[in-house]
Amino acid sequence: MAKLKHIIKQLSEEDFRAIHDQLIDSNADKSAYLLKSMREKRISDAKIMEELEVNTNAYYTLRSRLNQKIEDYLLQQMESPRTDLLKKVANINETVFTKKRAITVATLKKLEKELKDYDLSNELTVVYKTLKKLHVNTEEHFSYSKLYNEHVAYMLAMDKAEDLLAEYFKKFGYYSLTGDEVDRLGLTLLQREVDNVCNLYQSHRLYIYQSCLNIFHRLFVDPDLNGEGQEPIEDIMKQAQLIFDTYYLDAIYYHLQIVFEFLSLLYYDHYKVFRKAEEYYSSVNDKSSLLLSNFSLYTYPPTLLHTKLERHLRLGTEGELCEENVELFEDYESDVNDIPKHLNYVMYRAICCYYAGKFNDAAKWINNLLNDVSMRRFPNAVLEIKAILALQYCCMQDFDLFNQLVNSVQRQIRILGKDQCDDIVIFIKMLKISISPAKRDKSNKIRSLITKHKSIEQKRFFSPSRFIRMDDRFVDLLGDD
Image (cartoon, rainbow, N blue to C red):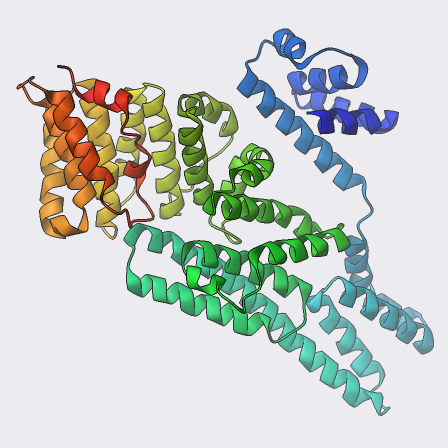
């Protein structure tokens, strides 16, 4: 909060007025009031919340959105060298036809250096193609032909790296639902192919793409790559930040910084360095909707939802998530075509409803999911989803729907084999004890199964049931003796 106040007070009067007017024109009256209060008034956050008539979660969401709007405005005001370079490339033919040859060559040579600094391979091919033609009668024609061919190859390598990056995270989503070893091998092969492509050239942009994949791969697919001889993940993140700081006006890098903040959060959370993880949690959490919507080509955003649940369960604040989600995902539209991401998002929302005691809402989320998405390819995922739905029916004491659903679950368990889903078998046993007409000693029987359930190693990446805390509340909900 102090950082936002400092930024607002440092704004010029012209910038402040422009931002305020934009907010008013877009009917963001509360954001406009918050902006003005932070600049002109010396009142506490509690007083601002009282005047705006919002709770703590809504206030921090409002603050986050205001911060984003200020950043977007300031970015638009900056004269981007990258944009200026693209304009110069677009005007190359005009220069060729209207300027003397010596001036044209000097202009292109200067443009070549600037494009190299920003690693703009596509535009460099245009420059070398023109220089090659201008030197058709000199010995330099061969040199520029060679440079042109090299940069065409580099441009193709860049495109290949971007395509492989997107393909990797798409495949990871499906691997997370299947847990299939063939899918895991496919991810490892893609990771190696990305390394091979990126190692062909000394390129800071390729290094960033390579790092997006390698950090994630080492955390969630192949921990063995963290051994001796490998660049430490913290060093990779420091190098990436150095690149971002050096090319701070690069639009792609500006947006990719959230990906590396997200990876930092995952890294420290993975190794249980929670104090460091908290340094990144707030900024990443504020951009949850944006991360899920726009960054699936560069990372796997659903892992943020897992991290959020684990964090709140650890802190005992899981009951607050349902209310926070209303503000956080107000404008988010989940893509049903991206099945892994959609499944994770819906189950996250359903589990948050469960912890808020809104069992009917949780059941609606899951039933809509089962109706909207075909999941025949993912029987294990369907089993997990139906187990959570059965829990909601149990809490709602809707025994008819529960029995219908459990019959379906048990058929699926028989097809898959009990050894493939021991934990779900025990989970369903707890629920059946809960709805059993025999009321004697239910709580102790459930506690006994909980102990057995906790002894089973969880191997599935997509496993909503692992976010169901089996504590006294859980026993009280299921046991009524």
